Image 1 (tube, rainbow, N blue to C red):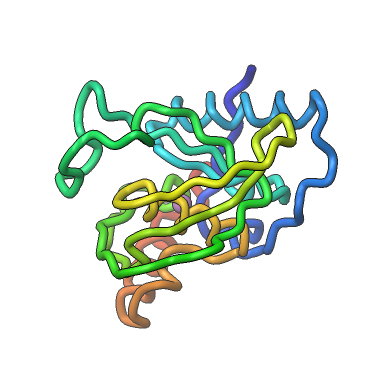
Image 2: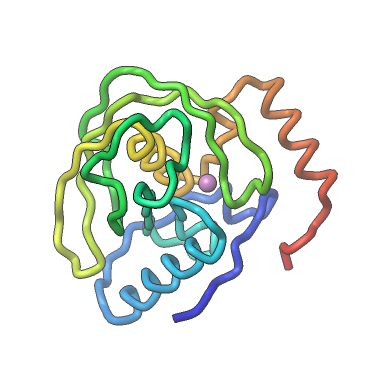
Length: 182
Ligand code: NI
């Protein structure tokens, strides 16, 4: 396994729509393993392939509960905590309600802000073995899935905020300069 470079905005690939996975092979499994290692190394809870410069519709998510709560908004342990989720070619088949959560993103270091999303989503996706499954998500899992699917569509989180907030975030990011974006 290896840790991949996480690209930060304004990397073009973050605003490019990813393509569906058509081949489920050993190379894909290796890529998924590398994405988990990269996410753990960066201390994230979700990662989309765009963020490591790969335009396949692949997402990994793992939201820890056991040690410490990731967010003060999380109230109780849910069945989706502490599990490794692989979402390949994910599709939201139903959504309901509204939730407002303070989100962060590995491609926007040290930036956190509130985003409005659907409170619950029902999705279908494939795992790395090519097996299709459905899952219902609420709270942080729901927020995370919607954030990561946005990445696959080339949408970054400030596009879900007001123009004013988006401009502030863009300015902050551009002031940082091209730090780790070779
Ligand atoms: Ni993100």
